[in-house]
Amino acid sequence: MQYGFVIPHGDVHTIAALAGEIEAAGWDAAFYWDGIYVGPESAVLDPWVTMAAMALATSRIRIGAILSPLSRRRPWKVARETATLDQLSHGRLILPVGLGAVESFGPFGEEADRKVRAALLDEALAILTGLWSGQPFSYQGQHYQFPAVTFLPTPAQPGGVPIWVVGKVGSKRSLGRAFRYQGLIPTTGTFETPLTPQDLRDLAPAIAAVQQERGDAAPPFDLILEGQTPTGDPQAAAAQVRPFAEAGATWWIESPWSEPNALADLRARIAQGPPR
Image 1 (cartoon, rainbow, N blue to C red):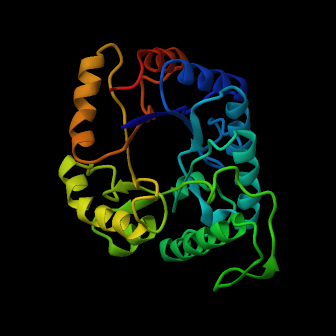
Image 2: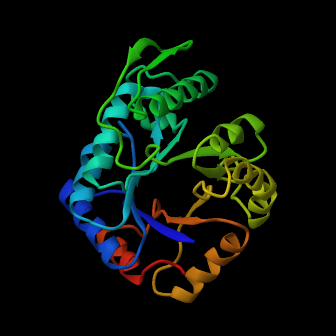
């Protein structure tokens, strides 16, 4: 299992410094988040600029944003941003995507209908992978259309940036979307119903089928869990994560969205290290 850490807030210099601390403490990835507006008292940074600062402050760990709702972004712009960030980080970028929380979209008239956002996400992902190829690529979809273009440079990682997709447990269409890419961030669809290790075990046959279809030479398909483990008790933190690792999770993303998550709290939890 690999371990990432979400930095939920801070100015851009602090976030870059925290990314360096995350690397020094033995974590495998550092993440920011992708929002536009969540209220007048919340400071929200642009994720691409912030990740560039994180990339320059580190040399080993992967970087990303949990997560990007592609329905409110132009996919060709995202293709440029991700390829550039992957070049800047020497192939360390991960792209987690999903429908996103409409609460973070702001009052700017972004598409709110869930089915439309899902269709936009599907088209955006097809466009991203096409443009990352570095070959002539055209697209004619319901929402996006353009003639053949060639985007250079390509991402530093062969085949493009790994894409992690949020998928709802029990939804064939939602899970099918994730299985077309490199990783699944499973969800029950509600915060009130947390994922269980059995939920992950139930996904194992489908994940095994995906891996078999891609062949032994393909990178392992990732199964990514988010959560918050205690500070000050490494054994309790490891015990919380262990059942999910045994059930097949390949990544644990420490996500201190709730208090205590002041700067001192974040630094203490980072320094404690991953819940191995």
